[in-house]
Length: 282
Image (cartoon, helix red, strand yellow):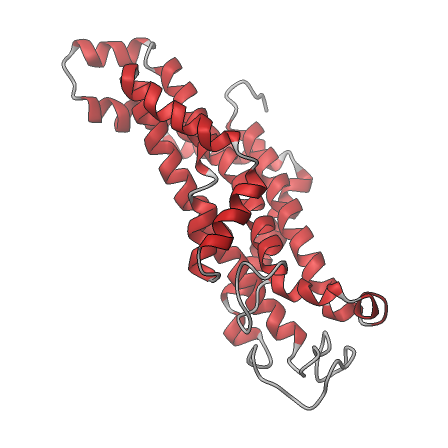
């Protein structure tokens, strides 16, 4: 039964040709990032006498201002940015799902407290909240993961709460209550599986936003710190007009990679939304 449902979802997903191409590109980038130590021709922090050299046979994407290989740093930077996006999305989704389940199922005072706190967090401008948190805590990889993870959860919480409010009025939930089933069984065996589809789709947008936020914060010097490469601090070289106009290999590869990641994730998320919609037809 489960395999037939998955095959149906896959057939619906395959109708989106652009999403299939995006999935292939995304998996390719993830594969290259995961195996960066094997693919990269040089260590990402290795310095050579070839300063700001254009692409060549020795350095496929050239070298930066202190002679580090741009291609090697790009592979490791993609790895770091994907790690930030994945972990931040996992944290925000987990927090949002738990709070949404508790708020929607128990209601009453618990619901009011959780939703009031959620509304308070959402009332702050998102980027301002991220910048303030990044300024308070010491910049670094794990700091930016935790900041993004604990800032992105309100949308997930409201989404899950809305689904729980709808599902708890269904006949199968009411029959479980009548049969005396414990609340944890109803929450995690009945309601949670039926609300994971929209959560999964929403998580793809959080994933893309987290990658963009990491790039923005690292570009501003408030995220992942050098010499650890990330897509954001690779773009930092684009601050100079001379580099922008005469040395595009220092910033263009990182910029294209960010665009590819975000666009591909969004296309996959759109196709996943249609594939998981029970009203969708083949």
